[in-house]
Image (tube, helix red, strand yellow):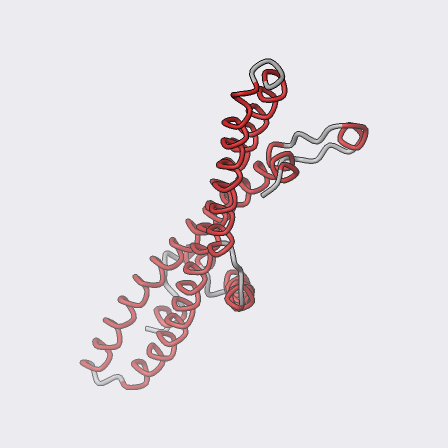
Length: 207
């Protein structure tokens, strides 16, 4: 992580370019993305809970249908249960990948704050060294050592963060799952339709 990153993180773009075309600090962009993902996670959790309840209801109705020897109805409900479970499993997978994305963004957010603080400390030490080194030469080596320590600290943290922020093949799989989840969200089997009739569906109406 460089000083340039720290500037982008805090939004301290200077000069004519920064004045003519202000760029929103990366810190704010990442924070907004985290909050957006968390909001979607909340919705996904609600959908999952709904499908878990619906799965239990349908399982009980299948048992009841068999007790009445109504095989046709039991088969119809079983087919609906299969679809419900597919939707639930898709949402659970989507939740896992959203959780992972949020975790990595939080890692980036914490790293960004850390990087900014370290860069400020380095800049302060460098300025102090430039001001007092001519008057107190004995202090210069110690201040240079502090700068080297801060550099090493930054490298260690950056290497560790690179491992956590490595969006590999899983990222492509996550995109596919999220695209499928978006399709599910727009389908008629999602909560908006179910909530209008209090959770009843075609299988209930056929009784």
